[in-house]
Length: 262
Image (cartoon, rainbow, N blue to C red; front, side, top):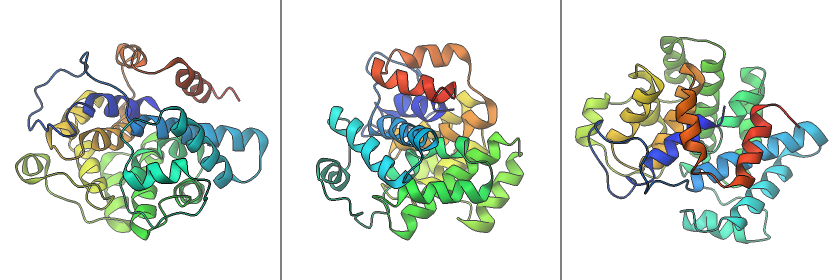
């Protein structure tokens, strides 16, 4: 469930500001680490579990979980405005279209039981901070792709839903390797990440596609990995390796979410 996004984040962590325009690189290195992408992915999962268990306002749960985890792990590469929101007691969103909206939303695609519910839950966990229309759209497109992949839809069906409802499809992976550069917006990250998934042949190949185009590598990796993980599944040995990068308290949240143990 969550490991697709987390693995994409870990693999991309060392390339965010040192892009590598090739698919030939080691997946896991001693220098890799989880970033804000993993922390907030886990926070959204935590909020969804609390909401399903206790009821109440999902938006309040989302704010609480993101702030609890964000304040415990403050130096994870958060954007300036989001970091300020995390440390504030002001619950107002700040009109962001940043790709942080999309990288953290994969749990929604696993919890929602219909496209309608996925869209509703995506809006609720996203709009607490990223309430710009492009932020809402980027998160929703990602969550819907995770849901469609989880439901066994093929790539053509997933791609058609995205082009019909969200984005014109973008350049090929080969063209992106040549022409794409760093872009922190949803509209400049989500279509590219989904293209990396669409052209992939396996979970690992999807991650390699994502890192190879450059740009905001950890976030591109997290978005691509979230969808690819739902579509292909993830090799157990890859998950076991990734677990070594995640603090124990965050592993506890992941394991509860994976086991539906809440």
